[in-house]
Figure 1 (cartoon, rainbow, N blue to C red):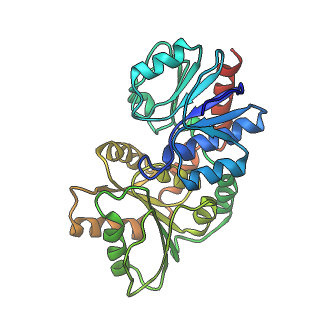
Figure 2: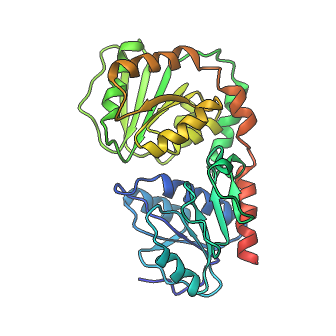
Length: 322
């Protein structure tokens, strides 16, 4: 199947257990923002049932094959795209936008390169084609109300609800490691684990729920007093919501990103999963629980821009209309 209809924008990404849903999630947020601007959007990629349902319910068409029409804007978000693939899109007359977390696609023919990571300008060979840093973070509109509610609360750092978000991949069994430690450090709290695979795991001192991918992640951010993640997009969304958050990174690239966020007090660094011992992790997790409930708030308020999606949408519209 290929696209026979001319859409203003084709979003080229994957959303399944193999790729994870982080790339799909941020692209879906962008698609919704563009749709509000009366931009016609379709998706191209490999999607599981969860992603399929989100696309269908939002009214987006999708295909597994990309057939670019001259003048079409193609937004790509995939670490595995090769230069030949991108050159073929360019040769077909596609106007390319890349979401590029590691500045690996800094080519002259790319119209716009988006890297919303904190401190991205220090990591890139910056050009006028770049849209860098948290000024262009593509959050879901639902998170604005969560952010506002967080600001209006005065919980003084009390913790009753803990969200542990692992996502599609758990390469180092960090879900089980974190749950075991949390059950030792906390008492009579409500913990929700969000992970692709359910664990055969029971807590002795706290209440545990296990969820697979959730359609309304905003409700969980609103519910949670603290958030612990596996190092991906969640730490950015938690920061936007002004929620105390920590990351146990699953890759070295995630660890480098978490280091920068932690230095700016936007996230607590629990370390790299493959190299930190359980005893070391226990000490760090205890520090986070006891120390960070209000510590991150000031930095989050000053660094996360509630208009960042508008800024990013404006940049994309400039490419569409050029």
